[in-house]
Length: 127
Image 1 (cartoon, one colour):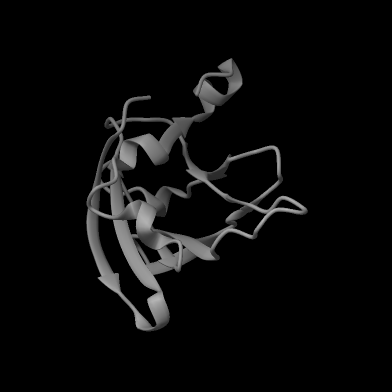
Image 2 (cartoon, one colour):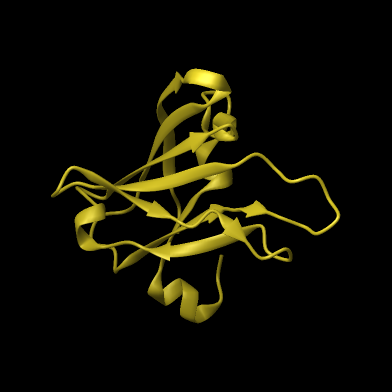
């Protein structure tokens, strides 16, 4: 599924922490969606990567839902199903918080790091 993505905002925080918000647009009338995103890979014997947190915005309640950001060593990405209330006018908003928040900065192509997928794509084994 093609995604139209953009970084919406970025702000520095105390102690090197930051928060960055981005949005992805999906074609209208899409089936239930999932967000595929990079995770923090902790590999035994290797330096631990910076801690970060990823949240998806719920448009109805104006709240953020936390997503898991620690993956298994062999996987660099994971996927989380999105509730209907997390897609508004085909737009998905998410934010990254923490020391590793730089990959959502203005110089990053959001479409290269994050992807909206549908159940039909997952069943067909498509990225």
